[in-house]
Image 1 (cartoon, one colour):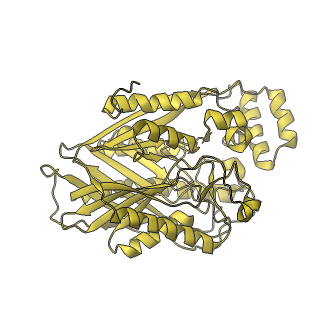
Image 2 (cartoon, helix red, strand yellow):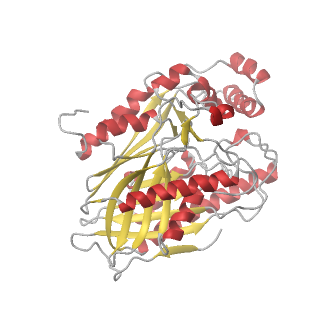
Image 3 (cartoon, one colour):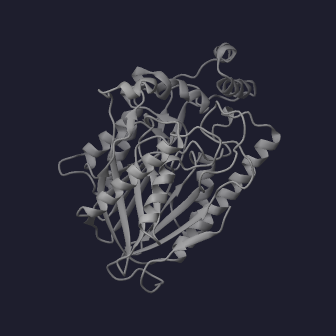
Length: 452
């Protein structure tokens, strides 16, 4: 892993918040593996990585408002932050910097061309003991690097202005309702999508752009090869940083768990989609942007989501006989758990988070969240709301009631590879959205007349 770099904001460095202004600090670090490792995201791969198309990065934006309230956004070119790793990172940041969980967002781009992370989807990869040791070694170093990166970002706080806008680009396609093999002959695309490109601009006291935070609700699955790559989000960040020398581009993944970039499967398409996304950011920057006052509010709840009745041991044994190898591995792990006298999971502590940057609402949800949630939340809090998925924990897919009732991969079958013994109960959508409402009420973000 490379050294940590900090992006400088114009103006003199100050120790505390300047009167009436935001303070911001930006840092970044190269996290490209320095030895061959297994790539994350696909069970079909049969060997380790073979080089890189471009570096993988973690980046941090630290913020402080006029009252001294602080928060940090970390973005990473990885599949996701599993709970154990996320908890350790956030606990260390609390101990070192006094940051509570409400003030920390760890968002993964969900690129499927990044490294396997320990304690996350390990059943999917045919790792031998040496491969497992590489994963553990890399993951431990990544935790240390994230903590150091956040410390570096806070050490470089300078006066800043924040403003937001929304662009649009349309390469995301609902993969549940449109067949990839037929996509070039499809003219009536079906299913919900979220084509918004939310953009947060951070400028220094001299007016120069220091950071551009942007997002999109679509899987990072253009590529499925054997080279490290940030996929289309990586190419988008490269294009934005080339257009704004000295600025740091931070991509966050939205609620795109059921969205794919289509067509796909080539480097040229990954570069094309990255440039399209970068162009949407540039258009948003050219529009009138909404500046917001230096007032930061944060809130966080881990809401218990319930699973249906878990299978019996006999049902797991029968399932394992016909399951794909990675699902068989997961089933056998559950069988061993039962044989050890332990119960299978029946619920999960699901992270829901809300930031308010002035009047800008930012919602962060854990797991692979389907697009329905972004649509529901924007209807509640406003269409300019930033809605992140893949934040703070990668526990499984989070289906809406619609997707849950339809079944299929996102609604049911993916649960096993994530180590979930059963699908979510039918109240999953209500529990998540009620928690968003509760946080919005707490921070005064609900529209007039709305009640939690």
